[in-house]
Image (cartoon, rainbow, N blue to C red; front, side, top):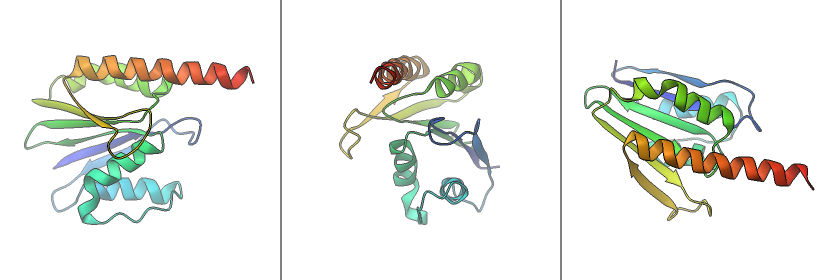
Length: 148
């Protein structure tokens, strides 16, 4: 098995706990992002060269994801600008599993959600801290929506 992709959808848009599967040799991680787009009719048509683009595009929609590369022992997370309670809970619940990877990184979308607003992160504690800040943003935006 080459690795896997897991996507935790933004619960305001897609009511599902998670989406993902193992990626086998001869397959690309991009195929799982395409399956997610197809299943939820997001309208994407990713090509084999779109691996990073697809991961970031799904994050731009608000969905948290990660992919692993088993041979290199790498796990990379893609953080949307807001992290829902479900997304944070998933990360915290699986945190111990994530520790076993040799290289742990993330790409975090900034507030403005543009191409230059992608911030690389390294290390599980930095990623968790960033996710908690993004969850506070999510919570404050939810409160603002309710008060309108």
